[in-house]
Image 1 (cartoon, rainbow, N blue to C red):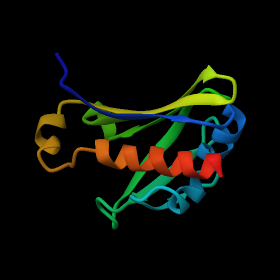
Image 2 (image 1 turned 135 degrees about the vertical axis):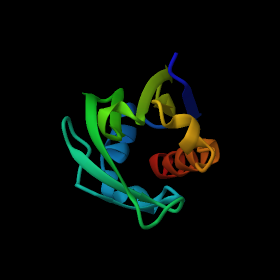
Image 3 (image 1 turned 180 degrees about the vertical axis):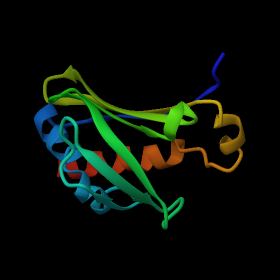
Length: 143
């Protein structure tokens, strides 16, 4: 059985899904509201886009991802990892309506692969970082 590790955060936002979607697909603007994002190269997050994400966790190393699912304005998935499936990360952005003009935004990432046990010892718990992303997104979307 392959080991898995997941991090997630959820927040309710008083804004329509289109407004939230416009923010989360403008990946190069993440540093303006995400406290752990240094920069994102590659432009807009659209189907098939290849992005390079730099974070405060390891500022010198880019995390290369590809937008593998793109279902506006509800679901976007980024996938990345090492060759041969040695380590795989799948980040999911999801927007669900909970009432008129109110949506639940969820951000999660699943890591898997044979190298996970070895690498997970040196990687931080991303829950706090995801919560920061959610708070920043809420503030921006509700402004």
